[in-house]
Every structure is written in structure tokens, then in C-alpha cells.
Length: 127
Image (cartoon, rainbow, N blue to C red; front, side, top):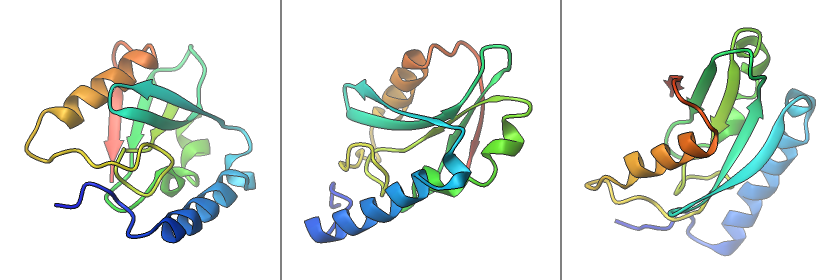
């Protein structure tokens, strides 16, 4: 299995440019965007959160990124502190190296992200 998501650097740049355009759109204007360092590389997070609401982690599907959640963040943020997490090895801004599918790496990575977000208990939604 190829552990790198992009076939070329030019392809990576095109996808990243389009993603960054979405992140600058009105849909993302009330969000905070940051990177979390993990032992698996950097992880990009889009958040709209306040500590008085329960956390909701949103994970995108394969060959995607957190832009897929931008349209629903305002709806979910009425009730939750929303965290959209770019999964490493996909077409987001997180590390481009994929996890081995037959390992505990995805679980370990997500535990590190949850710890970095200082989340004790959460709801999760994935595509």
C-alpha cells in the first residue's frame, strides 16, 4: 500500500490551494484553525468551540478533508463545541503519510488528538 496520499507534489499543491480557499470562505469565518503536534506528525483542526458546550468530534471520510463539514458547523455549534479533524494520510492539511491499516496507529493518534484538545468525554460523528 502506498503510504503517501499524493501522486505528485503538483497535485498536492492544487488540492491544498483549493482547500485553503474553502478555509477562507464565509463558511469558515467564525472558526479557529490550528495544528496539533502528535507523534504521527501534525494534525489540522477546525474548531468552533466554547467550554460551556459538550464536545463533538467530526471526522471526514476517505480521500477527503474537514472542508466537508464546513456547511454544518454553524448548526452543530448551537449545541456543541465542534472540532473537525483532518485525518493524516488524506487530502487535508495534516501529515500526508497514511496509517498502516493493520495497526493500532489510528487509535493512538486519535487518543493524542483528544488529549491535546483537553477533551474528557465526547460525541463523535464520521462520514
